Amino acid sequence: MSARRWDPAPLLAALHSVDVGEVRVGEPMSRHTTLHVGGPADLLVLPSRLDQVERLLDLCRAHDAPLTPLGRGSNLLVRDGGLEGVVLATERLTGFALGEGGVTAWAGLTLGGLVNRALRAGRTGLEWSAGIPGSVGGGVFMNAGAHGGQMADHVRRVAFLPLAAPAPSPGGEPEVLSAAECAFAYRTSRFQRRPGVVLWAELAAPAGDLVAARSRLAAFRDHRRRTQPQAWPNCGSVFRNPPGLSAGRLVEAAGGKGRQVGGARISDVHGNFIVNVGGARADDVLALIEWAREAVLRQSGVELELEVRVLP
Ligand SMILES: Cc1cc2nc3c(=O)[nH]c(=O)nc-3n(C[C@H](O)[C@H](O)[C@H](O)COP(=O)(O)OP(=O)(O)OC[C@H]3O[C@@H](n4cnc5c(N)ncnc54)[C@H](O)[C@@H]3O)c2cc1C
Image (tube, rainbow, N blue to C red):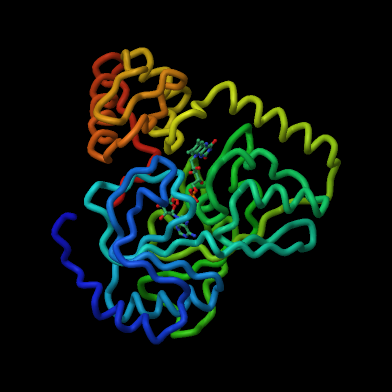
């Protein structure tokens, strides 16, 4: 583990007498990322209620703890040195409720779970998201999108608890932002520029034709099966698509497909995927990323930007 500046001991002691959910010390992040890579987090906390999240954030502020919200770890490359501070894992925050023409989902519900629950209640329109292996919170943070749909097109309101000032008073209400206030754009949102936790999102999902919705779902699944590597752990698209171009094709044209460093390999199926073929370290993945960036710049003159979030 790299040298740490923040000492977890005082916060850990405080957590013993406060109900914030399960607390794990030195938890390997490789257990919580779809790439199965990443060193230990000082503290990983698993709240299952929203009041536990509010309490945890109060304590993080009081102890100056760096905070990393974690969804399903499907867009993350955590370095081998791990994460300083508190990782707030949302996976147990899976609430769901029906509303007028929409649904409200807590941050930790998977997008697949969201679509299943919406369809069971006769609500449609979110099918594009079912194959994205992330959470509602991560989807909002990233403005996830696929098959012509994206989070920005559905969000009505998002509840957000900021880490830094102006923070609510202890036990106070979270901010509730309109879609416009979320400042969505291609794979980004205002939450990427402001530390804090997305608690829940209200999404438009009207009653609709269930047979058509289920057939869309099947077609999207089939398309994913044909075009994306399924066999090895990965973190989805590594690079953003430059306007009008495909990052995968650029990496392929630069001779990247099949290139391997340690246990990490640029997929033979899709040039924008790096897969863990066994025992990959974050350093292996980072070396491939650097190689791909330089090779694409040399070959095509295009500077690729990362879509995957490298932490810290
Ligand atoms: C096989 C595969 C296919 C994929 N296909 C697609 C695709 O088609 N389209 C697409 O857009 N993406 C795709 N992805 C990428 C990824 O699934 C999405 O970016 C997803 O939205 C990430 O959600 P997550 O819960 O896993 O977030 P994580 O990876 O856990 O986190 C991503 C970022 O969001 C932050 N975050 C997570 N939850 C919260 C929260 N509650 N509050 C504040 N911040 C939070 C984290 O701190 C981190 O910075 C794919 C990934 C894989 C592995």
